[in-house]
Length: 238
Image 1 (cartoon, helix red, strand yellow):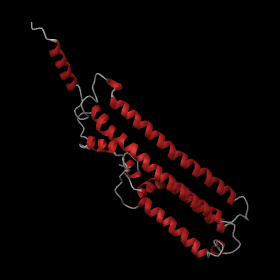
Image 2 (cartoon, helix red, strand yellow):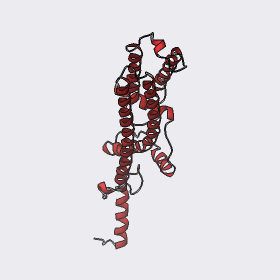
Image 3 (cartoon, rainbow, N blue to C red):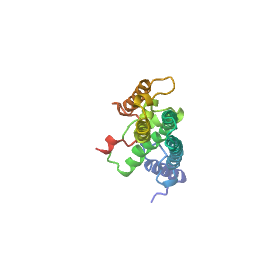
């Protein structure tokens, strides 16, 4: 029986280590001997933490929007003498929150895109080696993103996501409240009641109609969605 030298044993151990490594990820990153303490697991945990932090920032913006709108609605219906344009101020305020949340959503999408890339191309492949990779060049893309992080979606798409998820129902609530305010509490025609200072009621109503038409167009126009891992109604119906 041939006795192996220490150098031969070391070389054999290195060969076995390379064989235990997933070649789709990179040498040493999914070494089976490292188990859950591998660098890939730490990387994934870090990206999950970042994604969760930005998710909480989105929730805080939404919470503030709901609180402010609730206060404005309570004030506008507290007395018949309260001007109806308080609700229009609420619409403008909600638009500001929408823009802020869209910017945060674009930041949140950076981390979620990384998490989805790891889930689809590493963990899904590890659980079922028979499935095809979602993106065969995912390592190149992920490495480039770590070298220079970039925003993945446009502001318009981010606004569309937040409108669909949160803000369209809030805008709809304000529209109904405004319509009730200028009709149920009115002593004159609703167009006359909709007047704001020197601005005729017809101009105010037209401006509101144009704003809501634009919001619906942005939210529902046909587009190629760039955000990855976002559950949309058309995805849920499949």
